[in-house]
Structure formats: C-alpha cells, structure tokens
Image (cartoon, rainbow, N blue to C red; front, side, top):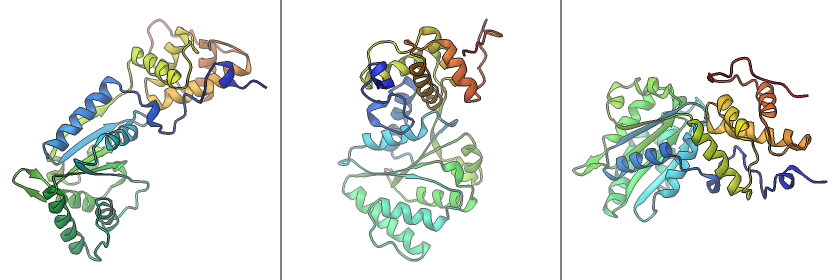
Length: 286
C-alpha cells in the first residue's frame, strides 16, 4: 500500500518536532541571535540571554550554537533543566562535570574552588568556557541566581572566565530579577518571535526540500493559513503540516488545500490569528 511519503514524493518525514540538525533553518533572526551570542562569548562578556515563547526554537538555537563552537577554541557544554526541583548543589556539580572536572568535591566551597582552578587552566590553554543552560525559567530560586552570579565573579583582566548563555520562556526575566545584580549583568539579550508569513513559506519549503521533495505539497492558500494558525511558531508549523499531510493522503489530495488546514487546526484547537479580510471565511471539509 502506498504511504503518504510516497504519495507526496518524500524520502522521509519533513515535519518531525524532534531536533535534527539537517533540518535546521537559518532564519534571519536565528542567524542574528547566533552572531550576538558568539560576540558575547568571544569578548568574554559573561552573561547572555535568549527568551522566546514555546516553540520558537530556543532549544534548536542552543544546540546549533553548541555545534558551532569549535572544540579547539571553546570548552562548551549544554545543560537542559527538566524540572523545577533543581538545587544549587546539583547545578554546580553538573556544570563542574560538564567542563571536565572528574572528581567533583563534596561541599559547595570545594566545588567552587575546583571550578576556579579548572577555568583558569582552560584559559591558560587558550580555551573560552561557555555553559549554555536551556529552560532556565524552571530555576525559580533566588539562591540559584546568586550562585550563577558567583560564577560570573570568576574573572581575569581580559574578562569573565566563563560565559553563561541562558535560554528560557519570557518569564525568565522574572527569574533573573530574583537577583538584581545578576539581571544587571546581562550584556546580550535576544528575543525569538514567530516568523513572518514569507519566512513561514520559506521554512516549509526548506523542510520539504531536505526531505527530498521539490514540488509544492501545499497550495499557496494552505501555506497562508498554516501561518495564520501557527502564528509563525516553528513547532506549530511542524505540527500542522505533519497532520495536514496525513489528512491529505487519506483523501488523496495533492497539493494539500486550505480546507484540510482549517480542519487540522480545528482538531488541534488552534484559533486563527488576525487576518485581514478572512473573518467568517473558515471552512470545514467532510
């Protein structure tokens, strides 16, 4: 039986929400964010922050940055916070292990001493230390924010011995404000937003091309409404497109039209963003 990959001339699934570097889309804003973050790292500024709503590509950006930091120039690590019960001890130990400290000390004072010695040793080797932390909004602790500030106090004449790059939802601003002195040390800040409509179109085309398809899978009107329902948020674009391709295959529709996008959006409980001249024009298909 023909599956939908074959039906749409695809070699693989183009809209998976799992992170795959082959599908990385270098939008203008992601490119600018990387440039600004690398500037913060290379000038040893200390603290950079990226905020954005759910699905705007923060984790993708963090992993991309990690991949682009040359091991011969940087000692880099990425930590992803998975729950809100993270303690200062856990975080300090994790950072210590990630930058190459094998036998991490028992007390906080011992760990800080080991971190300082390791950071100085890395600097002597000509390496810049970068720790990327994703989902930082979960670290709802004044104590943890104070510890991060303590790491930034480790410095030499040229600048900080460690650059912290924090990624999180917009409420990350409130978390940083738990320690006013830490918030004042943010030297680079970037906000990720949803794509414009033309970028949404380019994003969809890019993912289809990587998946081996060079022909239109969606009508221009369908793409327009993918953008309206997703608000240009990459994760939602992927979810809508993935569902729409399956629905299109089930009724053998190629390219996929707007009616399918409307139905998928309704099923996913997605409301349309404001669109001029489109009020009251949403259709169902049976």
